Length: 204
Image (cartoon, rainbow, N blue to C red):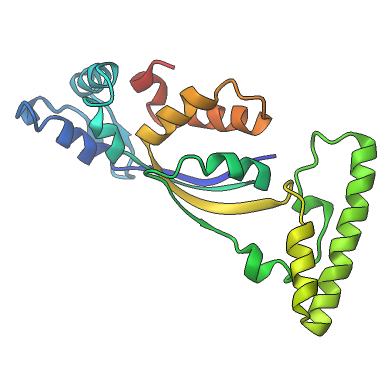
């Protein structure tokens, strides 16, 4: 399971102005930003942007200035793989350390959409155990009880993070993960394709 919320893409206009700096070609700019903040490529700017993207990472520096902010809720086993991409990405997560005991555990807190029936049965026992530990910790604040929750927590536990990335990050992620075994990566790559002008710029 993976969920995307509050996706925002920013700074196209400034990124394209910078893309024209090397040749002092600002007079050829023909893109517009509407009153509600929607950036629309003009033919000249789009042609330049596509040529720079095709020329390689040294030339497509401007896409590093196209920023994305998004809230992603995903299981810990997916976040473990996402954490490979540390350069140019920033994330603030909900705190397992501070807030794991703040609400009852339920099946909805975990990614179980691909579990077999017998696995879900076992998972319900895990959740019951976690909830017993949580109630015990709320009552006695025993640190060993808290540690038991943390160390017993399955990697299918869902965590929300607010991410900041840029178009260079997602370009690399798409090409690295598009054919990954995990369904979450396939959904992530499909989300990338829906971002403004991704298919036009990257030819994917």
